[in-house]
Image (cartoon, rainbow, N blue to C red):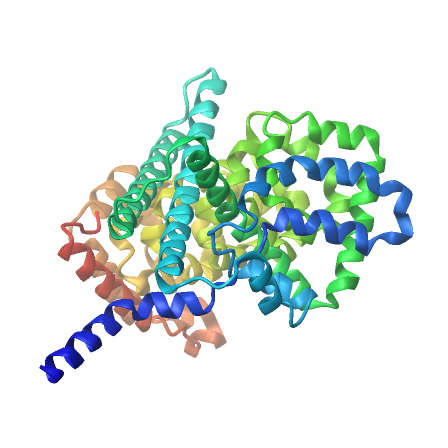
Length: 466
């Protein structure tokens, strides 16, 4: 009997180990909007008379977040990191002040509700982007180009899949939570507060990253001073407040504060770019990630603002493959502008192309004249990274084929052409093409192994490359 009890205890320990690991990290904290409303005035005491407008702007965030203070929601992760960075040693006293001592069952329930709130925030982000894409199609007032329509439809399908997966996770967590309900308006308010704080978590991560890069209080003083200077520009402040979706920026307040010092000099240009054609609605679901990578984006921000109409509908896909696409920005501006026009064609293919995006970059000048010809067949060539890594060699020998309409269509449509191209890419002499650098070669074999594993997994789920 004692052996059976020990086995049951071990099984129960294995069942709750993930929750125990999660609960150790969870210290209740107030929403970051409340913290910013307190810390920003403290960090800018030298400009005390000008702090009243900033405090007034923070009131909506305070009223939204008030219901969550002292509740069961486990405000953790980046938000806890911000508190620990600004106030070392404050974690345990704050836990006793806000949450008190709770038993394991109450903490487990809080963890499940937090995870449900995270998935609800993800569903809301997908829904907002879907609405923005639909509104952009309606505002166009003219037939879309085929490539633009296909890119939009593919993005809509991706967002619906992501929302469906998040909804399925919500149902699973609710089943684990049990039949307990929070009826009435108090339950609605609690769920809204939990979802708001979960949506604020990515914004808190941006602020935490910023505070760890320099002296935290000095960084806050610089950002507070930048916000005060921006607020003193009445025309600029009125322009931002009159944006149709300005209320959607409240969950991103921490990220905006973290980048205020760098955003200050770009604020007028950003306002002109987002104040038309629903640009802000398309960018807002990804604003936290944009600000997280702003150090890399800022040198190219003027180019981004000039081409925001083309880039905005594909922000989510661009950020997913940002590191690979960043290799292309060193092109001359005229060449880069011509490449941007192909974005609607290739954006739906980025997930399929994967490592090929980076492998093709050294050969983009040779590929650029043939991009519209290659695009319909690019997905079939994706598993063969040797083709992208040696695109210059293939084009030097066979580029003339792509200039003959009938012949290129016939050859590129052959089922075995990707394998043939990969075979030739490995064996054709490279010295006539690359000269002294013929012996330098990118290590792309691991990329093909990745594609084989991915393709095997997709086939196991009933999918395959086109």
